[in-house]
Image (cartoon, rainbow, N blue to C red):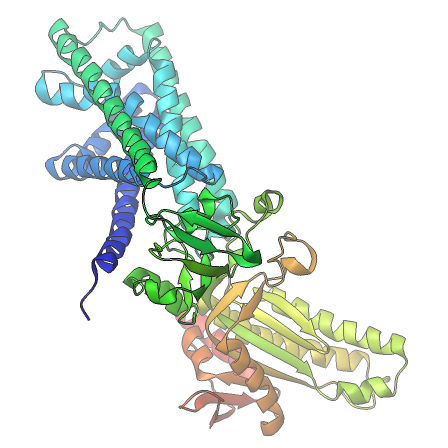
Length: 570
């Protein structure tokens, strides 16, 4: 099908986002290596110079300079382009901070670039640390320090809001925060300490000649004036767009509760919500990296172009209906009635969930284990309530300890059953091995409990366990009202077909009269083999092909296989 002009325009936006991200990562790599080089000043001036040669080998060669220059030009140009196209300045605080920091950096960066790279290329000037520190200290120390802090803060904001919806980020967030604080602190202490020692111990002459300064000073002034003119042009475009926009045709957007706003076509639905102070969930900043801004289009769906490949990919991942669209990607040209599907957070609760990927949900491959106590109803009928609770707590406690000892996470207790997740932190392979080891540990714990309570039980306690693995959605279900991450809403749960299959395998242990049913998928993920047990296939509702499983009683073969694998690797 031939794309309409609107669709082609929509398709270019993800490309701009990818270019902005790629160029930003290149600039971050340059800043990081530069800062780490500065930190060597804590050792000595000689260490600074030695690190400089490695830094120059990467960045000051034809390829490195071309990549760096194009990345800087691309990043600044796309930032100004996006600013000029904004329809509203009702932005989250983090986007305001990133915007203002980004616009401030070139003003401070221009003298540094001219005074190092440009003079080095055009004149007989060697921009060694000895020469550069002589220029910077003490007269330009404040400018340099502020520049470093602005560059680093801008980069950290961008990285955080790019990574925060990704699996595993929350686990390393504290370490990354420490890294984010240490790098600029060590870099500043390094170059300032080296500059002070150099000034106290050596009388280094000012390295710039009159010819160099007569060239660089006017150039710096002209570039700064040019940059200010460029910002002025962007602001002029904004003013003109707003002025002419008021004279253009308007459309109506109707929100739940009957609230209707009139706008000029052009902005995205998310921007329209911001322009009119209408709360709208939005985690990724309108970059189609999440689906939290999604809306159901009640009327006017036919006026919207088909989703771009980026939007279609996100909608497909969440299994969205045809009338669900991403507010950050659609630009209404006719009146719409919409219903946002994710509640927007209030400022009070936003602080508790910022950066918590599980609040919004992440997709991740894990192993899911179901454990159920057999014939617990019969046991409970013949006992006092105190005895029932005591017995249940002993069983659930022993099971939970075995799960956690092997790297698992107790999702929930379901009466006399337990649902556990493995591999959330260490990946699917380690999670599958941990889950298999946990089944053996749980069986041992139940045997020990039976031995302890042998005089109190007419029949030993028996359990059934089902274990399967694959892609699931992990999220804090029940926290969407913004109640924080404590209590029940703090529990992370797994959703998806893998959970249903694991539960089905637990039920299958009754059919096969065994204590464990585990899928071949788990064995493959763990890289282990099953030395015993019954190998068979079972039908799974909704799946065309049967599922290959192993039915075991007791689950000792996995412990043996696990030990064999460790011995083989060793």
